[in-house]
Image 1 (cartoon, rainbow, N blue to C red):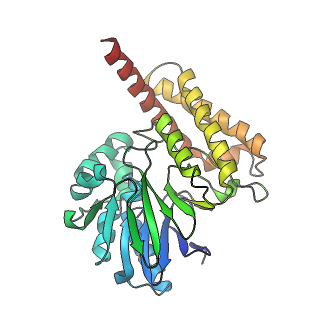
Image 2: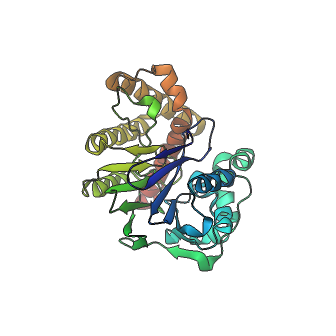
Image 3: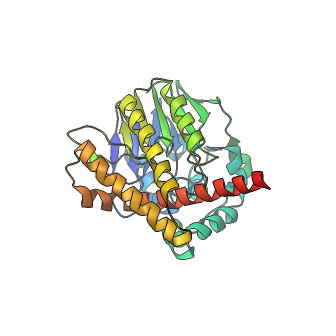
Length: 323
């Protein structure tokens, strides 16, 4: 089954089919004594595949108790409405800031069109379906959800976005991190050594919050992290050090950028591409610099866009203080 990865702790990573290559974005299933939690939904187009995987694993839709959204970006939550229609007993768990966007997804659609344009938004995400508000559970920091004989604990995890949460699995001794612990693609592993790269995509990147979230997760001494992009990584302490370093490097690139608007975006993107070249040498990626840049092309574009928005927010805050 090339489209799924079955781990040894009741966790399954499902290739959501999002994007232009395989194993770009995962939907995770947590299975315990016949009960299931789905972590993130990806997009509407992902639903038939996820339901087919459940069927192959002999899991009926009625066995899904929880659908947990790590955050409201559409590559993680765009399929929430359609998935809830297909899972009759499930409750949808999301940060309280996300509730109104789930009940009335027009707001989320309009924000995505502002960022990415109408054509791309429709092509990748389709029409968003509202969720019945009575089926939404507002996540709070420290909240515990029962699943079979295990406990899933929710933690607020701002930095990538203000509505981000992560999920601590007591049995797996691991976090489901969404984008809070960056991205890691197996194509960039070097001799089995895992790779990590920050995700600073728009529009609520806050470096101090992101660093604090990572520090909080590392304090649990997790045995693994399950990343939306993509799947399990286990060299958590080393990857945490790399992530700290690369977040600070992203900040430095943004602060050194010149110009405004498109010119500044191009300057930030160029700086991030140089960062990837340096990381290719540091990590001894066998893929080569140009192939690595192509693999990370979308991530770099989104990271540059998010960094630009962060700079704009910083400038607005400084202007407000000066006034």
